[in-house]
Length: 117
Image (tube, rainbow, N blue to C red; front, side, top):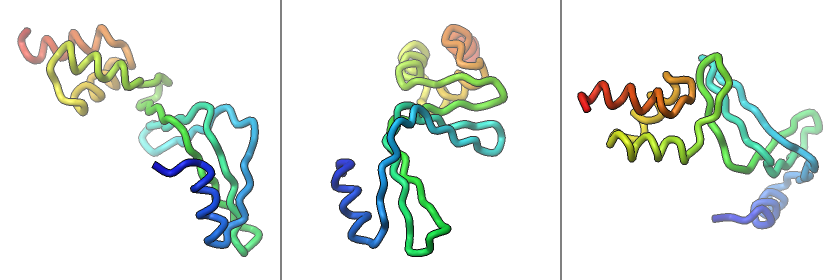
């Protein structure tokens, strides 16, 4: 794994002017279909190329994925719990959580009913 310092040095070697942006609390990327990727407490670098009007942002941190119109966060712990309780794949657990709006109990019950348990 590359450290933040190593990543910065590599970018500088490529001729990119690298500036860390301090105080960023959260970065949200809103995708088509209502899917959102949220990165809380990220490390953010602004990269400037030789063309001064173009900026590249490098965001590093733990992502949380949310889908649909309602805002909710799927944590890895929630996905693992649904998988353990129901014996389904990771994708099936995520889909059930999305359909249940992030409600763990509803997702587990739905999957158990589908499997006949």
